[in-house]
Length: 265
Image (cartoon, rainbow, N blue to C red):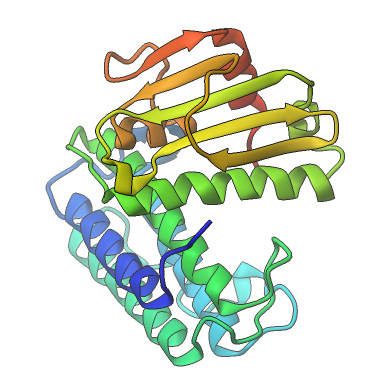
């Protein structure tokens, strides 16, 4: 699939982080539990995002050839005082600015360690775009604020998620993704609000050797339909399958089986 260009990923990291910062400074309760990440408060979620941005910045800036422990990331813990939205927002914004500068300076082909078998800065530009995009959804849900994302970004996030699942199947035989196999079974994702230029339909086939997928329209075992943002959130397990914005047609149990096992980390 055609990915977004490197500069667009950099722009999107800045935009998505700025939108996340606006949640932080909106008056939202930073101690509130994030419903889609129940082990975290909203503040803990934001600190996780900022720490991740700074970790990747360090990887890219130093052209790291191996993983760097997060405890070695300068400024990774964020503001000392808790419950301060202004300080937290400033730290988050600075974290994104640092990463975007490093990614732009490096360019997409610079060699950098990466955990998905793609050892370049381009991998990290894409990964962090979707890391922040999806965690912004978590924050918006916690703060009960609206959430929307550009169609091309949402579609690329689904592409990347499928690539990650396939990678995990190949490289982590003990992961739950190993169970996503079975000839004749398939999942169709269908965005009902995207024009033909978005090509926002996917066919995911579960084969004996692992998943294969492509963009396109085809009837199969189960279909998940709805607006693209809603399909994205449901596929990332951020939206319940009973939500009225989406529709499940066919074997719902197969889709639930997928959602329980398609993960990483």
